[in-house]
Image: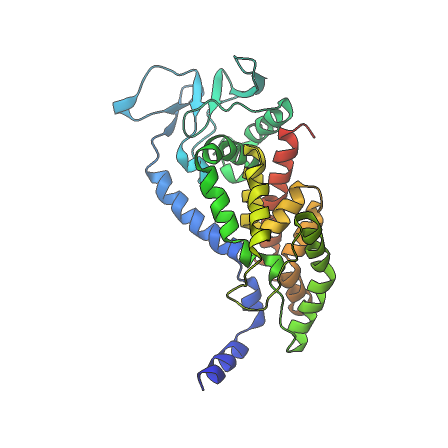
Length: 321
């Protein structure tokens, strides 16, 4: 009886409504709410005095003009952190000759933890400088600066929480997107299943050849369990990463809901467009069947492109590839 009621309720829901709901959109709404709350408590304010725009600290902690710029923590969440307070953006070699820094006028750019933003290559420094140069007078928009955010993550979060990041990635590996197979019980799910076999099975064969264990596919909402040998092989692969690579893998896996796709991307097995096709496989089939919802699907597609391509570009620039 309960099963029948649930089944009838699900059938009554407009498929277009279901297709517009996505984890990316929910995360974006939650992030925006958290960012707005954090923005109110930011320790920085921006004001205009005379012909220049200056960044000020609260009166109790205000000091003499600094030769560096430290971004508030709200920078990492996506909130608008204030008006543009600089005119020129440049890059220069770090004082110790080890890496490159970004200069906002005469100030050296720092991370939210007040560490100098020291980048491994000039290419990455110039790309991040371009993100800062792009900012408009009316406000600095961190959501247009994915490389800056990834650099801060690689420099600050990864070195301190590396074991925890790897633990979380491995913990979610059993529920990897590429292991979930649609059931073959009606026309729509059969179509999804056939497309998964066509597009995802080559990825599973690559995973087996790369790590020596055959992946297990499943159709349960609760996921399945991979062989311990495969899980250990994936964990060992993650432990061999440098900070930039682990930051990139973590960012891709979070967006793709797939550690397999993340590793395949950084190892060159997949191209960006191929990865996006796998990530959006089921939703794209729904769009083909029911149509694209403007302001929903199109925004989600654009967001996925940024979230997947930015870490790949970041990793390539950090290695001068």
